[in-house]
Image (cartoon, rainbow, N blue to C red; front, side, top):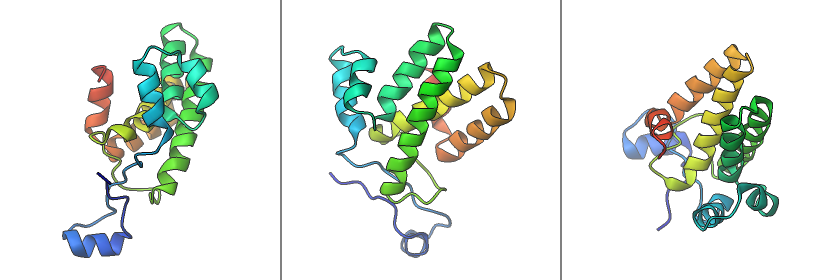
Length: 153
């Protein structure tokens, strides 16, 4: 099933009777799909990211592992790469810098997890302003994402 990938906002608004940009859904062929399969099969995130560097999911797992080990700078670096690779993918999917990025669309979760990890690592290294901006971005993307990620979903 193909998900909508963000109509031009004025057309979507007329069709849906809504104001604001339409949600963005990463495509079914995004690297996070394969990365998710490989992670579920027990492969190491470091091996996956070497093969699938566009996978925000694999980078976010590396960030989580580094954070759990107390390696905050490594966590920050991994999450920043995952965040930027996700931004590239979102833009290619029609995202124009604003609008929902639904957690309910599983392929979006790698980006949202990288964003969460970046905020957590930013706070950990004393970048309070960046952490606050990232929290605002995450809440604007999908308010349910923070609780879902914190709960380990």
